[in-house]
Length: 149
Image (tube, rainbow, N blue to C red; front, side):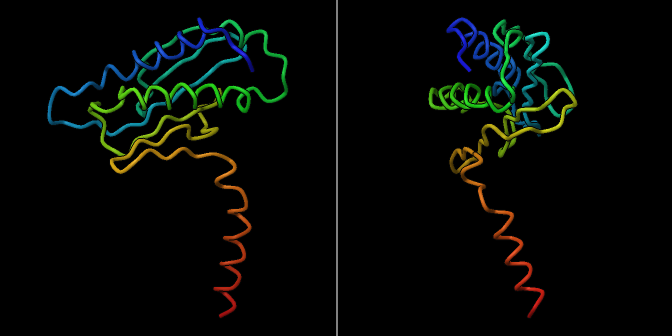
């Protein structure tokens, strides 16, 4: 899915606004993840925390005209790209969030579609289907071998 620079800027601005609530200011760390919920019908991007507290929202016009078959799969790379860029710029370095925390893409029912970015003290791990490909089969084989012994 191609979106305009203006829309990309709106996504980044909305994420920045959401995480700005957690800028370091004290010793108390907050335990939360950041949930990104795009709504294709309205074009709205809603960002909230684990307590369903609204952190930010914006409208992405291109989403309303989307005619593909898998909306979440098509917008996932856009979010990943912008989050990685923000991480590389150091925008997540001084947040008052207990690590590890994640940026999670969720659907209309607030069910997790995919974890977009995991921020940890050690490093940042980007999860993708390619990384997890075949994991189910490997675990099934391992469990079968374990049970046979």
